[in-house]
Image 1 (cartoon, rainbow, N blue to C red):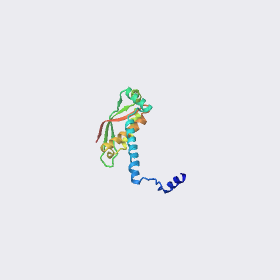
Image 2 (image 1 turned 45 degrees about the vertical axis):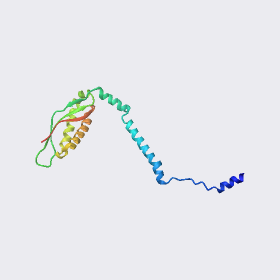
Image 3 (image 1 turned 60 degrees about the vertical axis):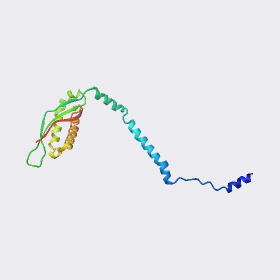
Image 4 (image 1 turned 90 degrees about the vertical axis):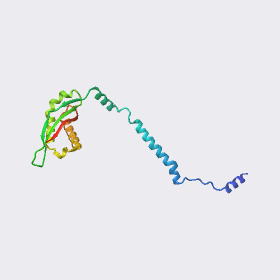
Length: 168
């Protein structure tokens, strides 16, 4: 009997393992993995995007909600702009500073001469072309904010707001 089993095994055709073709492999294995992986990643980002903020962000959000914004109005400034023409150009500005805390409105008058000095020095080097369009005003705001934050220490300046911007 054992001889018959050996003879049958030798007579049977060899078992060939079927390999998937490259197209089938891509279509039925790789493509679904990519789709499910990408869909899962997108779902994760969408679902967990609005989660609780990190500890530091949470405390900052609570501090902002605790008090309304505090603004400090600066006196009107008129500055001679830098020009290459014989005609003088002037910039008239009326600004308000948004402060970080109500206590800063008591501290700011003590350091205000430094803030105005920094503004004047910067504005004297600005050209009329630098102030063209909304991009120019946005750059001006960013530059004034950087200077106000440095000069107003220990008071905290969060933003510089334009009340009047006039070029003559």
